[in-house]
Length: 467
View (spheres, rainbow, N blue to C red):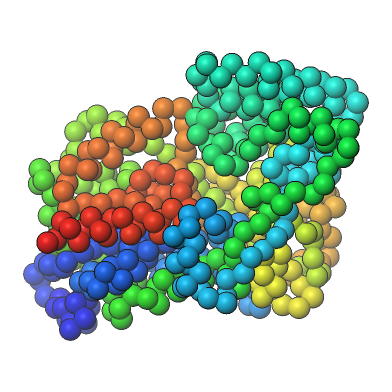
């Protein structure tokens, strides 16, 4: 292999010698692309992005299926980071719009708002449920026991919302989403998804009724042609020849201080590169397993405890103009294998042809489970039957379907995950020329705005290291 005048690898010319490059960015998901974009803005084009698949975007891309577009998940860009929001705004320009659409929870055949609004939930449960849930909730707020450390997610949910609401909504949904019992999950899974409400707010709802709220989940930024348009625009910023597809990382060689080489498989051959710097966005579990020499046993033991949740998406294309007004719908009933759905058209009308719509439904699982390996036709038929019985769709309106599998979609936040992941991250940190970021690379359930900010920080550190 030789380097072209842009500083990228010319894959048309190969030899038996290993290739030395400046910066190797592993993975072309949002985090990897953000690093390449930051390199370009720093005026440094001596890098290559290695992507195993034939497309970029990772698990945050937009798929075209005939006349329809759909995202690989109900992604939304929230303006939580001023700098990241500004940069994405400049990147997309008029293609980025503000969307206002509610989030819902399907409960007993009815839809209530998410985040949880007290009046709807309590009113929908009947008199006895209302009294019990109201009492539990108010007691949880009065006797919050803030001085006592929260033991696990189930404990957090009960203390924050009361036993009745927690066991009706939050715990069963979270257990299906993450594949573990509520008592085994870290309170950290709550994140920003479970905003609380005060006793005063509850009493106002009960006495005066509630007005629709412009809450965080219902107002967000979204690109006209799908969330993957963010990745597309970042990829467009990279110098020609610096984004390499079909390049799977299969191994690392290291000494005590740095990563010496990275082995790549391009489907036809295997070769070795010797980067000055490695920026990793692959799951840290995979990195450790590919390292030579073999890491210490305590690191291997920690890797054995870390898990990533996988997702199967089933997409239904429908010959109706709309299913609902929701940006996303959560299904909390334990009888359902799926956890949530989103209707792309409610984010941008460009996602579906005129008069038609689609539903993207998530089935969380692990790759070792039957649902991951289930035939596509069986997944589709089962989902159509369930949604038809719920009255959400009419099976006669289904004009097509697709299935999309997302491996390593997000890290599992089990109790003690922080300490376990730190063992692995601290070990990788000893390699002075290795930076790791993204959901997989830092075992952090982050979002695109997080990765854009983190990438800028990483590239500043890389540029300082290379001087």
